[in-house]
Length: 477
Image (cartoon, rainbow, N blue to C red; front, side, top):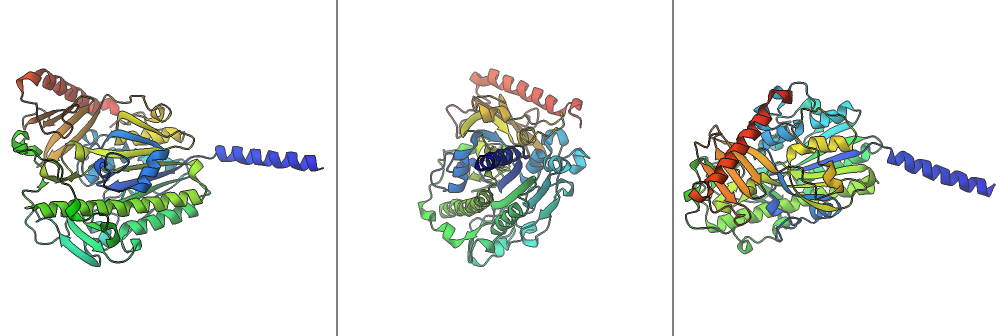
């Protein structure tokens, strides 16, 4: 009798394990807002502390050369959520992209259509930060993408605490609440006094509530997007007078085309050295606050026993200038603005570091393939699944991104050796060419150097071919 009971018990355990292994993967997608790779300690920054992101990087695959497709919130998010380049959909503004792609399913909608519970908490498609966050409104969201959606209202620049404007508004306005103005608020109260604390709390509650069904949970943190708002304790490790400004060169702007001078810079914002240091300190404090919220969500996943059945992705919509070339914010096609952190953790996959060029639009086909879901062959992203087993696999020869200045488009081709920027498709508004092996900070524009004209010609040809590829009718658009 005892032998029978032992055999029966072992059989039940085996069947239980088998059932667990056959369960569909959950997806936990976490995205920060305006997070530059240079502010994550799992990458190259050793001053900004991001222990929770670092831990995820140590457990998953960390991609070192991931680029957004448009260094502005709205078009970047529409691009990776639908899997198309902005230059294919012409989705350049603060929209969800639905008006351009019609009934084609978004990334999360694909999961919803395959019987997943899909929810977003806070900013996944574009939301005005701080405007929509203050109101608790949906912003330019795509309702078809979600089973449920939740907003995380926060006081933003009006938060209780010590507030300071660390730049003059380049638009000539007096108010300090605009989405492109660097205001620091050393907030009173705890994490829940601000939007991201509420986002972490709601995301954790949804994990607990839906742990027994397959889910696609998208968690959007709004920090470190301006205003730099965080509990005042997060500012203590970053005294502004100890912040080190990025290296500068004399007459740096002389070889940058006019359309390449960033829309917010130390000159037009009339920033003093002290203000520049305070801006960096405020950014790092905001990153620290956001990182702690990431840790709370990941801890909930662990506590609920879901780590072995959940794909976790962490990234940002684009980067952020922290005084490089005396530039601030995003929009530019220079490295700090377009390169983003990307970590993908898949159950059963060994930790690794992948140096292949990758793009945010690669997320859609990658996660769909991992989940065994059929997706449109017209998607312009490339699956990264092979890199999760072999990090030496090269998925792309180069990364492609676009941006816009005063209504005129500009394009980036970034390969192993070169970063090439063409202002307008024909380069009529200027060109930039940087040797990324010897000039990673992009100080020496070689585009007009006679010795590099063959390289310029090759890069122009590569750009022309890429634009033809992304605009071709056979893309199904």
